[in-house]
Image (cartoon, rainbow, N blue to C red):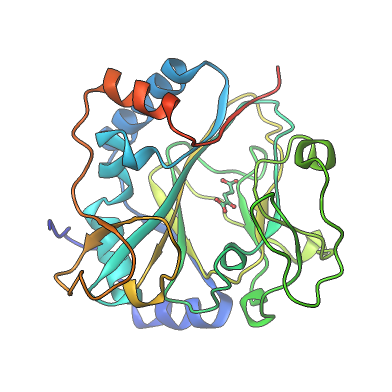
Length: 286
Ligand SMILES: O=C(O)CCC(=O)C(=O)O
């Protein structure tokens, strides 16, 4: 597995992750890489059907998406937080059109697997700038200390024991232009949110219990980012196969199926396979 040439997190950044529950502004992509991956996203969205706003699991179909999600510099950072072995559990490309009402409600990623360990973070890597106006990722600093909270469930998510939130009858009726599959009903004082403003090519890392979301895009330009969830292998207890993206640790020791090679498909084959799969595709309202 290829190793990058940094960036290396400082002691202070470790302490910040522990204390605040997130890190940001970590430079990952060069200008050429930003242009290349952005062009791949645009081409993929067009091929899949035009005004696509959220695509899950592209890394299992498209070689470019695997490369982006396993960029050596990105994995170098994670290795420092997670240890030598890393699995990639899921990815989402979120494409927020200019002047679009789509937003991501406050949620905690860890709710899906009931995971509260900081060695199962998610990253957000921008292919455009992330600004206040275009609805950058927002987090509530230190909220990872609050533990998991009741979430209004997505259709495949059991409520937390003791949760009083009513089941949502129709996800789209209830949440309109909501892009997230997990939304908490905890009233979050928006003033307590920290806006992760970053130039293109930079990355943030957030703890699985931190409350986060993002606002609609009020600007004229699109906002594009990759969100990807990783973990140390011993923390993963899900049923889906996961990609083993770094480390030589024993793979047969775990209960889950391991994918250890990037997809080899041509672009056209990947589009066909993706469209034929059960992956949800969200289209933006016109
Ligand atoms: O891209 C965004 O605005 C939010 C991404 C996010 O919250 C997630 O993928 O869990």
